[in-house]
Image 1 (cartoon, one colour):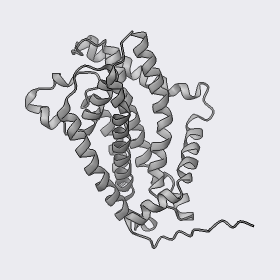
Image 2 (image 1 turned 180 degrees about the vertical axis):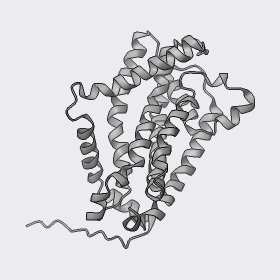
Image 3 (image 1 turned 135 degrees about the vertical axis):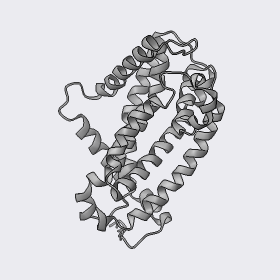
Image 4 (image 1 turned 60 degrees about the vertical axis):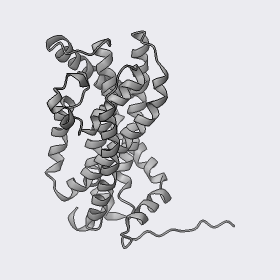
Length: 274
């Protein structure tokens, strides 16, 4: 009779490396938590996954009216709605990870107190679950590109790299905020504020070229600037602010390690502060 080895996890293991190993060892939990979140999110809804399209669609229409009709911002040779809709692709995923992942540990306090498992799984599962909405939005995004009869170019080969950068950055922010919210509940109210302000501080409905030169370098410190530019460039082609992309890559790598270290520091005290 084959015996399955039993792994016992204890809270005495405090090393970051050990925590990461534990995450890989119980990776199936990520899928379980993600499926649970997806079922809860769309349970008892009449149109189900269509909300993954309707929400960004209405946002894109509003932004197109404000920036394209009222303010008349330039988007080059691209139709304003198409430009905005592709710009929202990465932003919607990021905002979902920030809101859901940031509060993941606090919302699961009963589970956290009952059984031990690597808590890093919680924000990670939220980012994993958000990939479903991202995939649905992506399919519809390419439908919009086809409707506008906009040709896809060789830039599309770089699309997976920018999506990977988006996922890494979103996970880093979600992990950092899950640690901050756990320690300081005020950050739970800061997250929606960041989403609202960040929507206008990211070149989603206007071009990066419209940013005044004296504010350009400061503006590009927002990693979502380079990520948004890269995703849109890989789909539509044209020009891309390479400086903003480089800043996004470097900033994401730095934030990734900072978020893990911050989370590990709080992880040692979860039982006391949750």
